[in-house]
Length: 500
Ligand code: AHR
Image 1: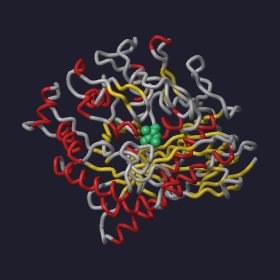
Image 2: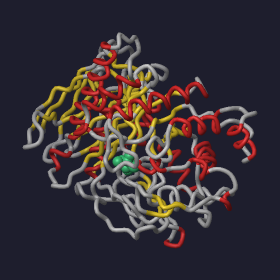
Image 3: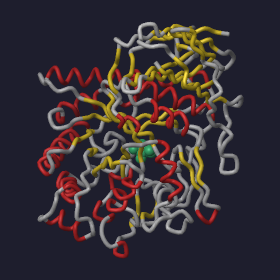
Image 4: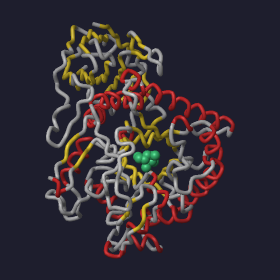
């Protein structure tokens, strides 16, 4: 058995976790909206056509903010299409994903769904085929109390009270050639700065997210140039990245959160450089508003211009869940800068929650990645400690010096609880994991040691077998005075809850 030691002290902290780090994302794409959150014919559908079984699952995940309506979709979206009388809404060719959009669900319905799911909307505006004025009008529609054209349009549509949407994204992946209306960094920086001014003049209480680059390989000059234009006008810069294992190199795949770590550090460095040259006192915070594993479904065919075909339906396996657990630890370890993050996406489309259409049985189930997210969302909201793990490392062709054990500690001062999350990346050996709590007050007691393990890295959950990969409180963590000892089984995700 290998050995690993976690070093921690209550005086060494990173910061408090902003709950919005447990955000997610719903795009008009595939079966995310139609047959995902919305399916009027489904047995659990409510009077607005929202699936009750899906809302229950979303509530279990505890997702405080949800980005909407895209994604690539937003760069061609006319927000007015998703408001008012449903019978008058246009059907449109949706160019981002090659389908037909019916607009049965839009701005009006999504804010209502979010309330039902105990969440809030993070609204993205179209800076691809549209510009600052249309973005500003949407802010007026959503947030202005009344007495003006767009706010009165909302009231006439049945919403007397403003939606009060706080967080707004200035476009989506505007550096990507695949994006409708893609822009150079200078073009985007100028448009985003002008949109930001108009939007904040319409509602000064909102917070704005500027587009960073679409992934780590594209980052660098884009961030610097965009920030030179928008630094004084926005509150967050976005990061996007997806991870995959197409060559079936699991040891490298399990280390991809180290690349996420480098990405975050790099963007912080660029943002702080622009802060310096602008002589600004403001710190630019980060919104990692698209992250997940995504590669299983690449190239899957669908019928062009059809309505809500299955698209991007990655079926996640057990090793994907280990990776998601590691990625979440990296996000939380940067909670001093990363204030928001969105697991992309939420239902059916590269998602933790899957559904069947009503005519196919209408079942709903949790994919493997649901579980590390759910537990970290529930027990990761506290103070992240600045910890170090002492353990052996391994190297592959792609990555060097990867610690076998990834770990994160979150202190809950209100309930006197310390929650430790840990992944053992070794595919062969368990690790004897120890830590000492003598610097903390009280006599520690183990509340529970939850383990997510499967002997088959490729094991999946399905509608027929939804409980194939599920966590169990089966770990052996024990306290001897202030010394805690636990076995981290090979290829396992663990949560050790300690009462102090
Ligand atoms: O989440 C799927 C797509 O990935 C989004 O539409 C886009 O922003 C990203 O490229």
